[in-house]
Length: 94
Image (tube, rainbow, N blue to C red; front, side, top):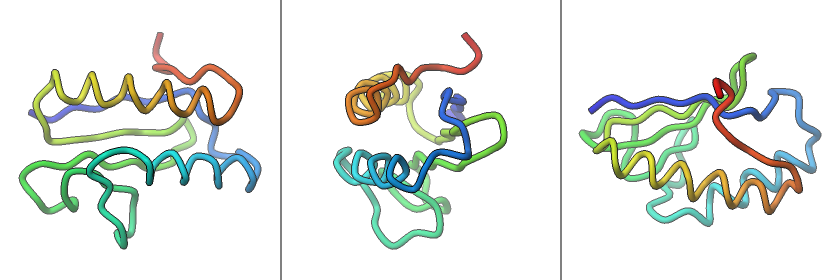
């Protein structure tokens, strides 16, 4: 059940844009506050989780959840990020 995707968000967004990204993160259901990295559904050491990290290639989302849940969740995240940032957010590999 290991899933991953890299989104087309560069690591060098302005602080004001990262603040918008953080607000979107927190608005997503199942947000887990107080983690070293952004997590949903559970912390990294749980059986079900999604986590985000900023990489040179883009925003990496990794998870240990059902593939259909992951796909739907990422679709919702991309839509919210697109609205918040005013730029289309999508799979960087496409």
